Every structure is written in structure tokens, then in C-alpha cells.
Image (tube, rainbow, N blue to C red; front, side, top):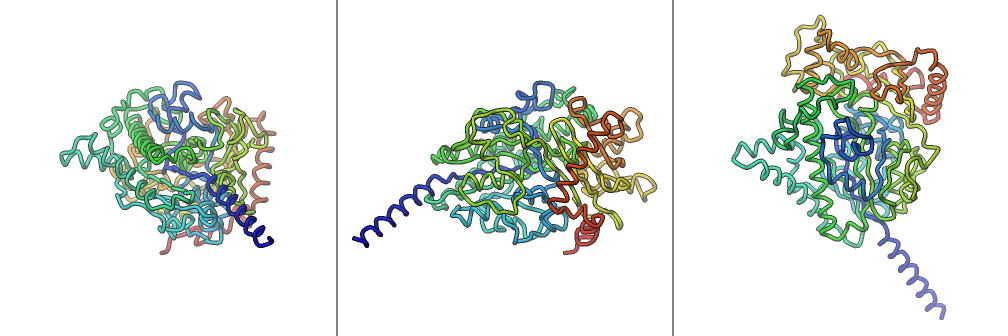
Length: 533
């Protein structure tokens, strides 16, 4: 009898364990390079009059409509590798050692990451292209390249260039586009066919097509987007001129390519009857590249990103206005999977918000987020140092500390004044390190530099590339584009003091090396100085 009871007990344990395993959701994690808060859905939320009126993203929007849209989602760092380090580890980027920088990054394998935690709990991993790079080993927080499914190729990542190339070889534009979307489909199908259907999965789709360089004129040619539709819809820190409108129009074209790829992945989930038990996360690692206030800046255009989440147990059809940060996704997905959250994760799970039925402001504790930046690209010349920044963003204010205000925020303009030669438009459009190295090369950067001495446009150059004061404060209710620094205005002195204290307390509490010994850790090799292989 005892043997029978024990056997029956083990049977019940096995049955409950099996049922629990089946309840664990799959995860489709869509994380696009250099994709900011750009989706047509945000036009409907924010109201008309912005570039989101122009872009068409029906598939991304559908994830938001079926699930939850976050209106105030921010990265922890507006630079690819440190953003992904914070996201994967669920910690502030400054807690990830050499993974806190871009060029020269090295992953510390002792840091837990949510994909590897899920792997240990029985999940199957798969990925298409970028998870964590540049850095060594590539995609280390996801198990290096062991879980790559890319047999169909990675041509999608240079979308406009490859479509144009195929068209020149005799293919129609529609057929060339379809070939690249079928590549995305085939890689996902490969993963789905090889996985163990008894196990939940985490599949990461990390396209880089939205990262520069895209093909000039491709927004119009490939997507019938008219640059003139952007007239009057660009933010105030961008010159509203034909060259910039066309450049941003091309960026929107790449976002529409991303959206179509998202549609392909959603279709495959439905075809394989996986849509009911799959959490879908759609986001990006920072704002647009090569534009004022974008990538590598702590202003909203560089740090505020799209975030839509749908799936089982998530109460859909809601808009959430709480301030959230992408590292929150690590404990969130562990929560959803029933996996223990490592104690060193500083982020907080969004699962209580996702499974609630409330909209708007849900969690009163989510009243601020913290953002920062250290080194982005390698030094453009000897002596060039990182540009250290930290910021606190609340619903009304953004306070930024520039720890080294005597340095240039996006790198030295060392060939513009007294240098050996003026950089050409071609260099500024195509060469990453021609000058002002932390702003991606492209037509907008070239236009800003070439017109920096024109009285009509000099202000745009100054806002983008000139030195900044130690403290910047922006009142977002009066100045949503963050054009007027009010840190020295008398009526804001108490706000500056309060926010700076809260920010510095967070940095000290979480062990940020930037506030220890005057930032010595980040100012010396290997965190600063020439990158050595």
C-alpha cells in the first residue's frame, strides 16, 4: 500500500509539473536596433502633428491593440551594447563591468541574464541576428552563437540596399522585398521545426535594418513615403529642410520594413497555433541614429522608445502611462515564466501591471527612471575621453548631469576648426569616425556640419554638438522637445536640488563607479583609451 501511495504521489507530482510546464508561455522578443518611439499607434495616443502621423506600422500597432502599450518606456542607456547589457541583466548598465561601454565591451559571465535563466528552467532558445554586440563574445548573454537560426541568411539587415541591388539585377521592387521577408520567415520556421514542442521557447528577433546606413531615397522608392508629408511634423530640434526630411523619411521606410517583418513572425505564430500561448514583446534599443537629440543623447528622442507587450494572462486593450525602463523586462519575463528572479537585478517586474485591468497611471512608485551613458565608439584621436552623463526623468522634468562639461558631447569636432582638412559631405554621410564620432554618419549630420555657420541654422548645430553645461533641466510640460535649459532659472532651483539629490542617491545606492573616486573606473583603460584586441 505504501508503495502504491508513493507511486500515486509521484504521479500527481509529475502531472502537476507537466501541467505547469505547459502553462509556461513562449516568448517572441522583437528588439530592433536604433528604433525609437516611432509607430503610428503613438500618433493616435499623442494626437496629430508628429512624424508618427506619416509612418504606417499596422503589425506593430496590432500587438499594442491586443496587449498593452507603454507611453513612457525608456532605455537605461542610449547606446547599443550598454542598453542591451542593462536589458538582459535587469540591472543599471553601470553595474555590468566592461559591458557598460560599446567599443571595447566584454561580457562578465557571472552576471545572470533572463534568457540564460529561462534556458536553465527548461526553455528552448533561438535567435535571428543581433542580441548583444558589439562586444566579446558576441551575444554572450544569450549563449553566444549556439542558438542562432540564420540559415536563410541575414540580408534583411541591409534592407534598402539589398532590395535596390535585386531590383538592379532585374527583380521588381515588390519581389525583392518579398524575398527578404521570406528570409525572416524561413529562419523562424527553421527554429520552430527543430525545437522540442514539449518545451516553451524564447525566440529573439534582432534586426539591424533601422540602424544606419540605409539607402538615400529609399523611403519614397520602396514605401511610397513622401518627405513633404513630414513638413511641419519634425521635432523642434531638427531643421525642417528638404535634406533632413528626406533622410528621416528613409528612416521611416526602414521602420515600415521592420513592421512587415513583425507581421511575418505573427503570421507564423498563428499558422503553427502558437499565438495563444506566446508573449510578444516589441521594442528597440534607443532613438534614431544620426539625428539631433537621438542616439547617444539623454534627451527623450534618444531614450524614449516603443514598447508593446501582448500574450496570455495579459489584459489587453490598455494604455499604460507609468514610467518604465527596459531593464524591467528581465524580471517581467522571469515572472511570467515562473522563474526565480536573481537578487542582484535592480529592475522591477512589470508583470503586476500587465496582468491588472487598470490603465493610465497604475503603480505610484513608478514616478521616475534613471538613464546614463559612458563611452560609445572608440576614441577618434588620442586624448579623447568618454562623455559621462546620468539623468533622471520624471513625468514633468528631465534633469541631466554632464559630469565633464569641458568635453564635447558627441565627440571632438577636431577637423572643423584648425584641423588638417575639412571633412567632405561624403565622409560626413558615410564614414563613422570622420568627426563628431558619436553621431552616426548620414545626410542630416552632413547638413548640420556644412551649415553650421549659416545664421539661420547655427542653433541646430549648437544644440547637437557644442559643449553643454554641467546641469540641464527641462520642464517637459512647457518644453516637450527639450530646447530650453532652465537649470539656472530661479523658480526651478528647488526642483534642481530635489532631482539631483534623488539621482545621486540612486547612483550611490547602486554602486555606480562614476560617482566613486571621480569616475576613475570609467576614465582609465580599458574603459577609456584605445581599444585593444
